[in-house]
Image (tube, rainbow, N blue to C red):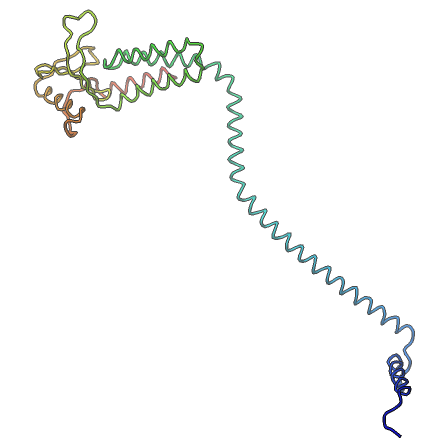
Length: 272
């Protein structure tokens, strides 16, 4: 007889092995129905736990992503906060300006006339230099205030430009040739060289250098200069015309600095 079992016998052995897997081993008590059900419930519970773990991991990933987005938004808000504060302050200023716009428009005509009048008074009380030019500027302003074709903004800009021109005189070192003598003194008008040191000194010198004078603001007249002072004026003229390097000049002032300060104080009191 061959050692190899027939195919039918092999099939029985395989079937028997399969059956044995479901049966208790020899000598063991068969599992009760409750134990089988408990095993099934344990298997189902483990499946639910595995499924819950997958869901929990997905939720954790979503939570981390939300945390990253939250940190990004917080950083962006911190960056935008100063800009928002500046915009809020700018809007507040604009609202305040709008609230006072009506009152400003009502006061603007009076303010413009007052500025022109003060400029005219300043020129009349100032050193007598370029008087015709400066008076003509004031007259032009008065005409512009009566011009209906000019807007209030244009009128105000012209007034401020005239004031800037006057203020610039206080920082200038200037020289020019002109005529000495006023109205009713045609026979005494003569051509001279003028020298101006801002608003503290105004001098003249004849072309031959033999006569010269300094304007005395407190007396309202020209006072003669001695020979030494005339030499200083001649040097100043050359400096103002870029014909000589700047240097210190020794000259009498047309008005003292204390009188200028007093005039400025009175002008400020008049403004208030």
